[in-house]
Length: 396
Image 1 (cartoon, one colour):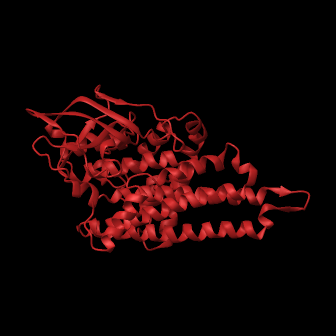
Image 2: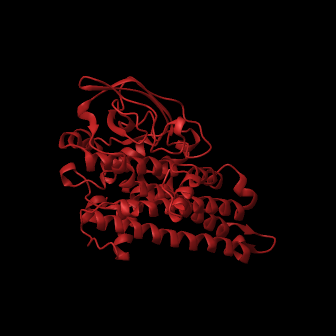
Image 3: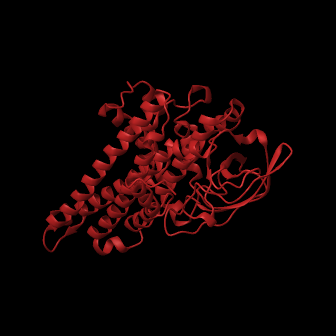
């Protein structure tokens, strides 16, 4: 396997299409061997993609943003969005787990102490450990940056009692980056962030049953009398988590991957499906070709935008500048790519005709694609935030 070694020998010019394609080829080959074989069973039986994630972790992809001291690949956000797209192209559930792992582990990498980073991030490469965010609460809905729960301090420990409404990899993550209010304030936006061992007996995950992305286990996660030492408190503010949360861009890449998977499946189907009565294939119909062309154009334009945002994040990061100048643009892109995934999946089902309605690839893609629109920030909330900024109103 070329893997890490193949990429490290390439001149990392992120505006060079050849370099970007080499990264895409590298992860695509890995995914074909280590992710794709598990997809059908994982989706049908709602299984968490543990084997796929462990393989990605041991190969270094889950440590893509870490430096060599943590046995990471030392790559950037540009390479990360390519990896996330290719993983999601094979399976949306695995892509979501991957993107949320990188998003949460990035926070430990950026704001953790040296002890925290060694304790929690080294096993990502050495053992295939994964993490995720546990943030959203039912009482505040899609406004995930607000929590009503409060941690109670008891000496050197904090006691956590709350339920997180949607936690990707719930009950499966080796550790969580969780958010709650602190004991000494009632201010809605004042939050603290704890690194919590996923094996803690006080953590319970409810069963995950959903229309799509059945393997990502994004269900309620209950913390009951979970004691966390102050040394597991992350030195990060809500602004650090949300305004500088560059790795969230990986979720955008996931939905782009779903769109590409839908286009690939539809194209393959129409080329191979013959109508022996008319001696032609579905691909011989202009109306079908036009539908596919519209999806292809939208994917290419969205990919260019996503790569451009990722490059800008890399430039800011390498210059030591705040990443929050592109936060609004990441949210704008989220709306476009999630609606694109839905459009691509509907188009794929449409051109496949009655076959598309059967249980199978088109049905799975359609179910999976719907998941991006309500995912935080939901498109309705994100659109309102963008609109408020346009007319000069403060965010909610």
